[in-house]
Amino acid sequence: MTLDQVLSRSYLVGGSVRDELLGLAVHERDWVVVGCTEDEILSAGFTRLDLEFPVFLHPETKEEYALARREKQSGEGYRGFQIDIQNVSLEEDLLRRDLTINAMVRDTNGELIDKHDGVSDLKDGLLRHVTEAFADDPIRLLRVARFAAQLGSRFRVSHKTHKLMRQMVADRVISQITPQRLGREIEKAFNGQHPWRFFEVLAGCGALAEWLPEFMGELSGETHSKGQQSVALAALQKASERSDRSDIRFAVFMLTGKTDVKNLLSVAELPKRLTELAQDLIEHLQGRDVNHFTDNDWVRLFEEAQLWLANDKSDKRWQVVELMIQDAALADALLQVKEAVIAINRDTLDDHALSGKALGEAIKQQKRDTILRMLDKVIQHGSH
Image (cartoon, rainbow, N blue to C red; front, side, top):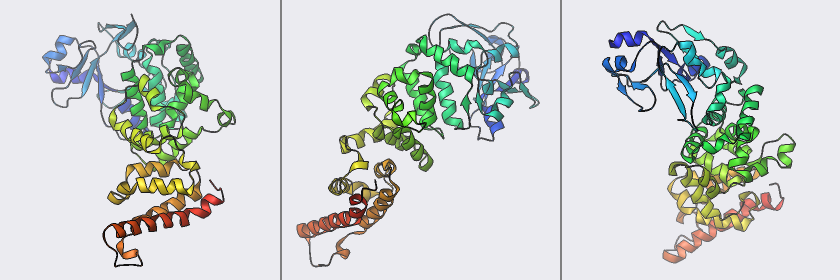
């Protein structure tokens, strides 16, 4: 079979179709090939990508092409399936997809094929499973939560899908999810536009209580019972609206919530690029809540942070501190204090003759006096 013959039997599928319909940027394209054998696709110049699944790389574009397949659960976990690629129709392949919004394809003419009302669900903002086979793969719990994080608050989990997810948790299938896979999905969620939705969805189906019971304690408290966000999720939403950096978002989430980083890392294998900033600040703050700092606490933190501020006014660690502040008046005051402290140098002192150790001490004292003077009214009036 030639390359052109394989391409004539290929359909653009999944996320690229969904994102294009949503008007989002398409970063990668996946294809499903119908009516082709493994030998035929290899003879056309494709190379095998996966030893267990029939997925191949295009010889030129390097995009992924998967042979249409049926799946039957035969064990536990993501790879606990028997694969059948003999005479599989497009309709049969689409039945194994997780959500209706991921089960749409475009043919070689660009015509949309939508067998499961994915377009309607996109318009309605609905995350809905295709078939009951959704429950065979525990990873799909995480995928639904991650899609909620990526697609935003307009998207909600359908009632039937939510019910199925709760049953999956009750059946304890999440024990099959490895720390590596949980970590990958968490990182993807923090890179999404609305990462707090990831935790809301997992809390709603009961999965979060299994992984992070201390965080669920916060969600089930008085704030949550009144229909409000938890402090940690509200802080994460604020951080996500102001920064697209996943490490800043993660640090704000961990430092404002009740989840211990060690506990999280015991259930999820997270990369250093995501966690290092949070761990650094946890060491600096030593359990102190910046929202309850005294003026002297702020003086000490500014002194600790001199290297951050001197090297870069937009240092990530200081951004996290600012994003953790819940009171607007205090947040505004801190911005002004930071600029004032950065500006203090030899030229701002009354005595320009100072040098050496005396100069350093005078600059340090002026910074302390500036911090105390500028924050005193905000802190004394208890506005935060």
